[in-house]
Length: 236
Length: 133
Image 1: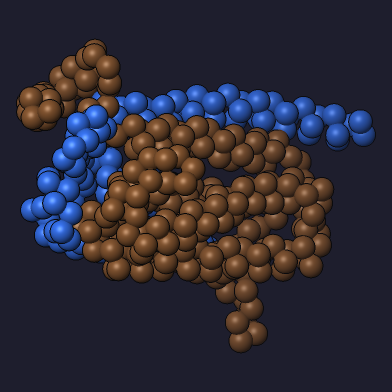
Image 2 (image 1 turned 90 degrees about the vertical axis):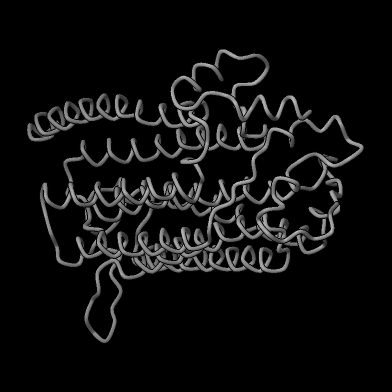
């Protein structure tokens, strides 16, 4: 075992390391566990899904002859009689970024085995996530009451509604799934599963703090997708 | 062995396989990611600043190429910070970074294909819709 660990430490770095790792025996990702590598590969496949949504949005927006509704006005909130452009979306962006910050610190404290602080930060992350989904539900309700449908809206190109519901709907689903997993992992952490290496009820694998980092990868990815949606759908 | 080690120095021990489980080779390879909390707070702050900047682009109603350039610039900076620091890609070995990061830019080819296609569709629609078809 110690032989192997020294072997890892002595592996070359940079592009030589890349060539050595990929041409080596048994495993290409020497320092990432299978769980982390598989989460990255899943996220890559998820990237393709969201890319397809954003690409179809680009295609319909570029090819329509009807004017595209101005997102700055569509998503404006009226505060004190004056419309503030994109206010709700900006708040949602800050909420999601904050959740990413608390998640990153939860991963860090998890590896320090600070069970209580890490679990509270995960619960805070879940709370931010739930807030985000709640604000999205509010936004959907507001738009639906104003007459936006997947097949039409009062302001212009019909494709606006279908793009909006598809893209934000899929993203909101991802956030919701993330919140559920965060709550489940926080419970496991508080129960001490990762300290006692208690086996999971479904996978029968030993509990370990690395699962928090893997969960974090998923959560940061959801934030990452929002960065692209915010820029390409709401701001463009 | 698991008697609540809290300091970062114990991490090497924490990520090593526990006694009596020599088969646990997966954890033997794993390196626990450990960086100062301050780093995350700084990145968090920058993400706030960059988000505010991209919001201000809309607030001040910038338009045209200036708007699109700024939006894309802030978007890429934010994405870079999240992937590099929050997702720890900066500390992974190149074998993993290359496998994951080289592929998304290939989507730009897809973007270009669809842009040509929609340009053509747009022209066709303008031509035939105008003729009453």
